[in-house]
Amino acid sequence: MKISDLQDEQKNVSIGGRVIFISQTREVHLKSGDVQKVTPVSIQDDSGSIVVSLWGDLINKIELNSEIRIEKAYVTKFHDNLQLNLGFYGKLFLLLNNTESV
Image 1 (cartoon, rainbow, N blue to C red):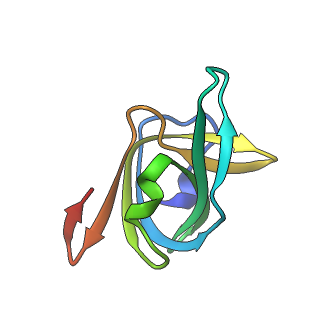
Image 2 (cartoon, helix red, strand yellow):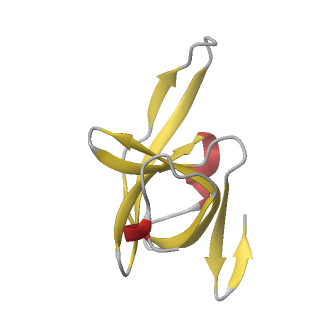
């Protein structure tokens, strides 16, 4: 699937791309009272780009220009822009010379 094919409320999305931007990590206070770190990153394929929110220490696994693959994600709209969310079941894979690492 290509980034340009994504639609709001789409579920079970698998997509790949290159990390083109990593925003600053910020802390989010959850309803449960816990505090989690979230880092928005932008990924791009040959059809477009999209923001993906990475939670916790997942950001430590990638860097700028990393090739990644995301599976079992879902799409939402935030401030009139589509974004990709990993959620509880989502997975992120770092692609290294045609092999995968988590």
